[in-house]
Figure: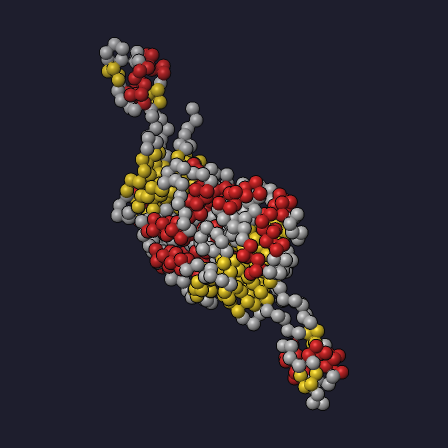
Length: 306
Length: 306
């Protein structure tokens, strides 16, 4: 059986001012066919089309903060969803003021969407559960930026334990107990004897996780929220040549992102949100690698299977 | 001497829902190095970059109406102008509510632009002068759409008359009188005799004009505002197969656009604002040509010298 999807598609890797080849922030995450859009900079709907992502499948949109490069694509995307016939609800997890903006845009354009929008306003007090179903949990956590901003943590729930069919026969366990075994419970066999779960099942693959941190100043308080994730996206707007500028504008450098990744013992780090001043992104790897080894560079259209 | 520029660059040709190859409405008009941006759908700043237009040269932005496909690119463009160091003022001619939207976006993002924005709120009562300098006049005029909407008329002012140097000598007219002659005035020669302007000057090239009509239902009241323009852009969201839908949504068909062009005796017609349902745009020409001969199709990156 194929493992359920856990795939990230990068739609934009630039910071505030887009360039000819870089779009502002947006990522699409597919966990077990739940499609989560993370931030929605200008042109996100065009990027989704370009990379052949079916945007009507997106039922959850997460907006980290209300700087334009993280949400100016949202009104257009929601409008296109409406025009192209969407009926099913969408849930938007975002700072509260975003609803006021969307309401005003709909008022001036005399538009009434054909589908409901459920609003879930984020808070920056602590780690908060935003979404949970049978396969996935999503949390927000506070970040330190110039304005209210949260990161997001996406976790696959523990997968069911795998059944050892030979062991079922050996221990005379009924197939009727399979669901209980998958859940990790012990069972009683056909002879009335209690059989330990671990004799009958095999460990499933480990649950995977993804953390999204954009935008933030260098902040060690992040570490506790993103510990051990399979992939960490951490903004690296600047290189060390602009460390002062990073601090002033509440952004990070590539070195700082790598230090956070190392402290959190994550498995892989993806850098992005590059300032338009940097044409070449190889320097981001060069600067970060002394501090953390397994680094990817975000770029438009990049797909990462976690 | 080369004639002053009068050039249009099409940045977007789609109607409300963009497609893979079509962006929402935006055009850049250069008259004598005044750069006028007309509508500003999502991704306009990216289109400007793609087609190598220097967007800091834009000092005047005209927004026809507040459906998203005509202005969702404005916040991002204004923000990038700010981030890339703009200091000089920009003037926005638009429905009044747009200022409220921009103010709200700046409030939630705690942004203060480094350059002033002058607002000129459009009215839809009659033809109104919006801008005038020594070379150009720009007017708005009312259009009939679902919400408040205006078209725009861009007129080159009459060019100075050309001096016939041989005639100056022949009639003994001083070079000190050249400016008066250019303005079309008669002058008195060195012998105290009045000399008619037309003996000393040659007709300049005719002044050119461009009219922008998007979005509008078929409306013969437009004709008086756009009479005889060199180029008319008239929306053609639909073909005749959707004539009913055009009427319901206050849009036009290609045939209707051609009929308006013919009635206004314009020199050339450009169609655009195509519904996403039409993959192939040749059918727009085929439908319009029986009613008007000289037709262009808007497409991304198309440049038209008027």
